[in-house]
Image 1 (cartoon, rainbow, N blue to C red):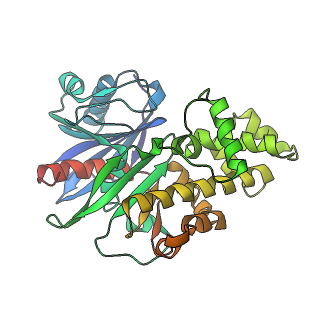
Image 2: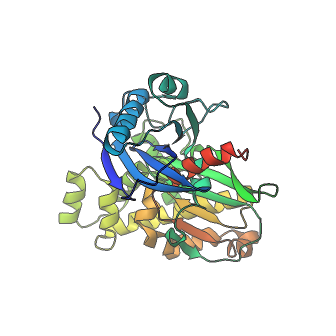
Image 3: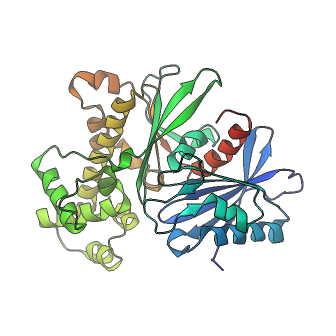
Length: 357
């Protein structure tokens, strides 16, 4: 049996008539939400969390989750949608998450559980759909800009990996719909000698000397680790108790970020990281002409909102020669609700039933 961590959002389940299971399967965590549909708005009742690296079979895990919900709360689940970090087959039945060794097969899960329907979607397809359903107080404005009615939007986010999606206005359904992307694996570009040296360090550290450095390699949690270690080879930093703590804990990204205001090497790491994050956001805005704004999701952004208010981020985001004035008017927003993907997966089921998706 997998250990399951549980978070309760609504204590009264007596009025629950129709519930569904939403999932967000990433390289570090597999998160699930039990939603009730009240009208057309999904309401999160409970979230359940397991470590992805401990999952050997998603059919067995799903069966365990369904039994837990039935035995603990009397909730019987028949419909599910899982967002996964990777490419989804056109039939939305199979996915091999980029940073996991275990595949997700919807048909195999249905055969081994009481589910009648299971749809798989890309994790940032879920983010794009979920933005409209979370508490709008969890959308933190970094650059207010000048929104353009019905112009394209975009969302990106780094965590264990790096995801992207474009959001296009559909005039028939009067809403934004996501276009999936694997742009997190596109080549990242160095702009000066220090950044070129960083890329050489990343290639050597990952044993990928013949492989271009991707945005994911730089902006993921492991990218923060490598960035910190690389800077230690370029400058003689004072060795302190903070340095020792970071080394002893395996260069954990959360630890490096927590010391960013107290330690010079941590500060330099996040200044450089902010520059690359802004460059990634800027490039994607230009790629899809997201004049109505870009949303930055993912665990790193939600935990480090101050990072995006740094001059290193703001200046790099708007640094573009001929199009700098355009970028200054593009709204930049942090998505601070980590459950946004769960809301998006739940919304997908509802919109799919309505014929929107």
